[in-house]
Image (cartoon, rainbow, N blue to C red; front, side):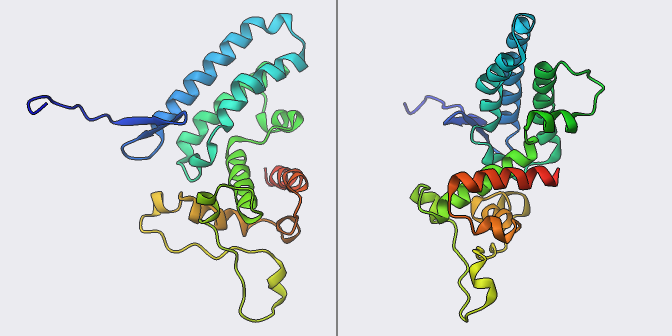
Length: 214
């Protein structure tokens, strides 16, 4: 043991997410894109034998599920990395709809009722925040958010706002932390949406709100 050498790994996998030494998630995005692209390739081999609803179910099972898994960790990533995942979603949308490659993808995604990747990430952050506020999130998540309670009775007291995030020590890493991302995303939601107590109604209203922003 004294003379053996232990190689230091530049990345590690935890719950299907690959963390690299710089936490820029490049290795995870690379693996994600590779796996999702291969799934699209395999589904494409069967496309001629399947109707659209069947193809869409396969895409949700083997592609969309990968894109959405732990995607809150991708909040605040550089646009270059997000665009790689967006290209995968665009390819999956073309596979389902059989639209041409030169067609603009925003109307196609809206027709499928698919949120773009960036909005899907914000959706996940907002949903986790909702669960934290309503006692359905794990304790380690709930402890990261704090509801703003004004000292005096103000009109804003019923708006369900979160305490503003403390200034992060590093801009890139600090702003991506859930303790910072949660109030940033949550406080930008409409007051009526933040006041909803039903998770089902919140998810429906949140998706509609994010669609209106695209």
